[in-house]
Image 1 (spheres, rainbow, N blue to C red):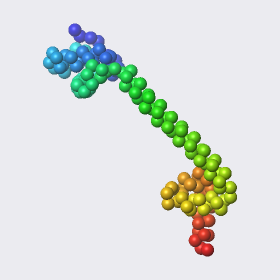
Image 2 (image 1 turned 45 degrees about the vertical axis):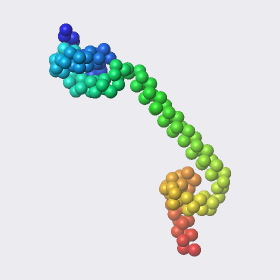
Image 3 (image 1 turned 90 degrees about the horizontal axis):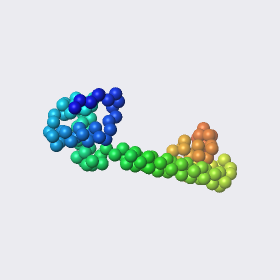
Image 4 (image 1 turned 180 degrees about the horizontal axis):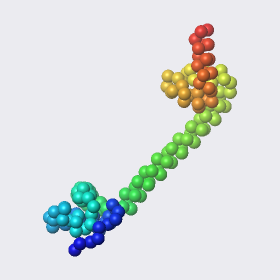
Length: 141
């Protein structure tokens, strides 16, 4: 039963299960199976067998894996959005607390061992050059 070679590298669940069944149960050579089913590469069959041995007949359920992947991606995107909101809240809080330039410079000096100066200057809306000049003046006094 020869079938027409598929033009794309995606194969249906039925093709995958049939290939695995023929190799494992009927002990047909992989080369014969790929020619008969129109599979482009024998490596595909070896991967399907490995996956089938690990996950059983559910190995080729695309919707399950797709939903899990989307769920994880949504979770990561949600966390990123929450962190962005938190950063903006902290910036506004710091802006209220640190009204003057002198206070901002002192805050950067206090935190520079814990965070990069570039990040602190950016968060406090202080040009890095001006902060470095302030620090140099403070060291000279």
